[in-house]
Amino acid sequence: GENVEQHPSTLSVQEGDSAVIKCTYSDSASNYFPWYKQELGKRPQLIIDIRSNVGEKKDQRIAVTLNKTAKHFSLHITETQPEDSAVYFCAATYYSSASKIIFGSGTRLSIRP
Amino acid sequence: GAGVSQTPSNKVTEKGKYVELRCDPISGHTALYWYRQSLGQGPEFLIYFQGTGAADDSGLPNDRFFAVRPEGSVSTLKIQRTERGDSAVYLCASSINGGSYNEQFFGPGTRLTVL
Image (cartoon, rainbow over all chains, first blue to last red; front, side, top):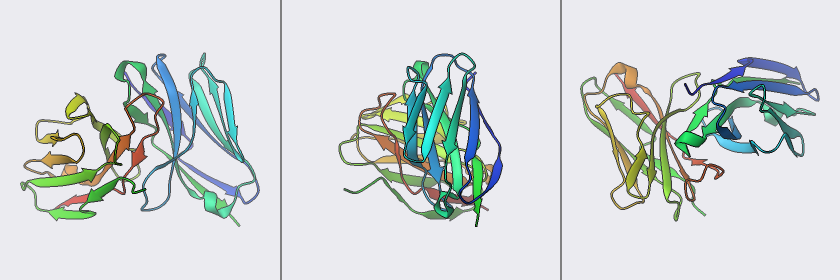
């Protein structure tokens, strides 16, 4: 079935350090993997995405990696800042369902000053 | 330009009542989605519209839930005989044409509380 597992559920890092969030997906037909950031009481916002024909993508301090063989993908945030504190969701769309997004359960990231 | 908007922002109702939640997508976006987000969880897909038609309603939990988009723009999610378990934030999103790689833009959500 369609499933996205995400861990850890909570993550606390020192400001300036790196944070890594990992996800696995179940459907080998998945072809698109967006990551959303949701601040408390706010709407989810796309921060980066990766397609299944790409292994890695970087945007300033944020990078995503994808291992299609293992069905793993990860979010890496370097040089963390206080404004990075939020809940992060990985997600996968499914080819069979075109635009249906299946979200992970989220990682609450806290940046310690 | 204006983003996705949803009304009301909060809705409190009693068990057994009927509620309607409204979504205004970004102008020109043909694809519209409804999700439900329970506390501490990721958004859960409910239904996807392409234009006026429901292209995928596989996420609707039961027949108490129904959604319409009669003119291909505004959408209404309707919940009959509400139950306490329906309490959640209902999120709406839109994308330009529903393609797999198109970003989905989310609205602020409607927080539904069923007493």
